[in-house]
Image (cartoon, rainbow, N blue to C red; front, top):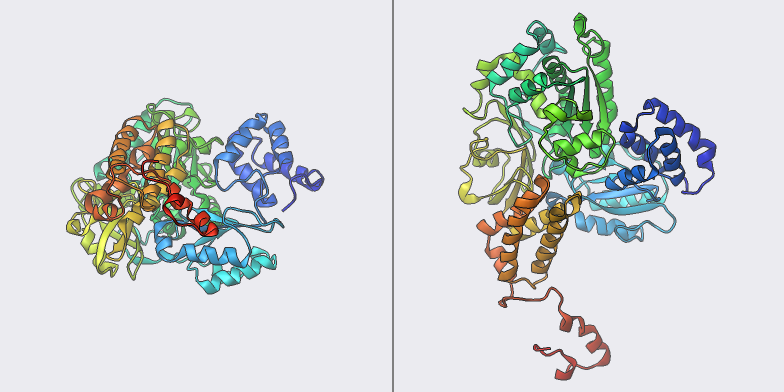
Length: 604
């Protein structure tokens, strides 16, 4: 990593940067990708690089700095040759991640959130790495290391002290398992390369749309919008270009199914995107890959090239004249909000990932304000399968309103975490039995923004009729304090708020402070009432879904596990968050006084 004012940037960095910009066609919409590659080379984004980019891309320097400051994985100042981020998801905490981080900080003589004086290393936390089935986990320079132990942390600290290049670290450190525990229609498919696409060429775009509509397929991102209706709206929308976008930014804590699909079923993902392109009349597609999955970038690029070589991408696909379609991969840089579709599109255009006002919706005004069909990884896979087996057979799987199968990311307190595939309609208790969970107190469905299901409701079914889910299934046994679970989730929302709208920016901060106050033993019934009032404000005034769901973890755990809160409350109707008399205890000890005059009176 070069110092920020190092003259070597001009000597070697500037020609490299100019070549990088040329590789990206001098396109300002690819700013995030350019910044990511600049950081990978220099360890941060040097001031000289920003000035040069502003000139080459013809955009204001302030815009570049604004974009770079939005994403947590980008740094405008040196942040260490080794940048270590421990996953701070609740499942990692349950496995001892905090103690492991403290151990590494002690071994490297460093405080969390700081850069060592010699510029060697920084240590901090990140919300979730998508490795919940094999935690505790961390990222080193955006490369994931799982199954941390005290021994492994000690070895990592030694490698950092020795300034050993990541390329020379033990390969098994970076081994990531898929942990597929139960397969079905999707994970068990044996489709040949391009098989579905070849069969669909004779159908044409309109019949593809009709078949998807007839299958009853709904989006697998959690909202469950009918996929066929979305493709039809995009196909019929007026625009000079149409686009296909795959949302692979699964940042919801507890979700990791897309990681496995991109590793195991990448061809099926790209097949589904290509089928969508044929249906909506698109020539260009994008896969937006979350920054935590950087390790998948090169393998995915190889799959795309193989598909091009097999005439499954590019010009005149499979010999069909005029059927031109190709896919680019854009890598995110640490922003949970970019999982929201309009924020993802903003990021795809090289901007800050701030959600747009809707309407208009992406199907008419998406990428570059053109019609865009945007679905997540699993949805594109399911679309290809629905076309392959036919609408009637596909509808026979699952339930009436939730057709097909669903991938579930199981993590937490169970002996067999991993990926489970079920037809829609499976009960919570069936999944718990399959993953070996015992003495389960609660299950968090669909991440922090989802639903907390207590033991009395384990008969409920996963599906859009009852428990819609993006896939997360976090298990908590009867030793778990559900207040601490909600406390962690509240911190997550406060950290991940994009800050665009005041209700969410301020509201998530107030919620965090209130939960911190309760955790410190200063909470009252008044604070719980204020959380309920805050939820009503966020529900009605927040710009996007993050703010509207931020109070969910607290309200759901309050409903089912209220004693976990009440046991922490004082009996007073109001209590300050700061105990002034308690803070004077050290002074009393130093002066040897503990008489009444050394204490604050209650009416003071």
